[in-house]
Image 1 (cartoon, rainbow, N blue to C red):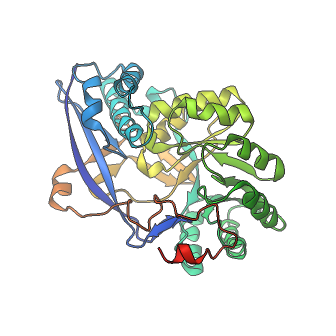
Image 2: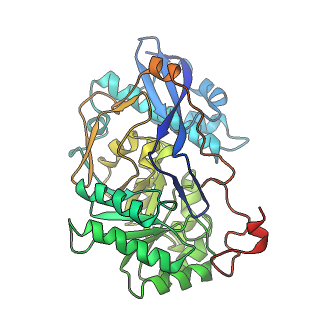
Length: 387
């Protein structure tokens, strides 16, 4: 069997609410979803989602190859972009193609991916995450009540600019989750918006009356010494890593003792997740995938590693024209038996209903504010308000 071609289409996800973080939000709640479909001479196709960046430049590494050689082909893609480097958006394209390759491999074997990878239990423990910075208190409570009704006992709040608001909103979330547990796990995600001393002051103040399980991305992603100093200064665990692309970017954090919960972005693919999970396991650290809505295949991979702790569950639906063979119950994900990673695409429906929806809007969560990490007060300053 050989890989013969690919095609790319784009659909959208309607989140049904504004989504974002401390850096900005998307008021429409609509985001685009790139889909990459790998074709073979046997008529079997593999589906990858999350990114279509640099696919033209990466595909020659796969063309004419047997799709079952997934990990070797992953390294061929890395080698293909050796000179310019694989970091950033290109790594997202590698991740989508990698997801499609794993889908093909499992379909050829006639097994669900979780079984092919060696998973024993199809249940993947999750935590609720509303991307909720733009939700008012009433809508915040409603979202987490829905998640509590599905059995979730842990949740993550987007925050980091208003201490009293974060304290109040964590209490709101905890109140909803206490229908399932006396002591819910509460996390705060600052999305790289602080400097070190801001982080120490903020988390220390929050911990005076809030049992914080972890603080996520408190500092810039590469600040290994800063993360280590923060971890030793607060009770909460430090979780980070979702924006790191490649094992070489994780090593300084691990060597410095700068991470307590190793995170990996689902959009970067299955092979990357497996390699980072093994690296974390060698340091006796847990792994937690972030952004499952970008790559459902990573949930399958989570069943096959010994140190998976919990996976972020951001939404209960699926992109338009996409069906996912899974169920969200009992505070996690129950994976199905369909061969492959369980994602199927109705291309005709998608092509007949095109909508423009981008993450990359000027005030959105993927655009770092000019004064992030430089503010003295939460409200910002005149220069920032003038933007």
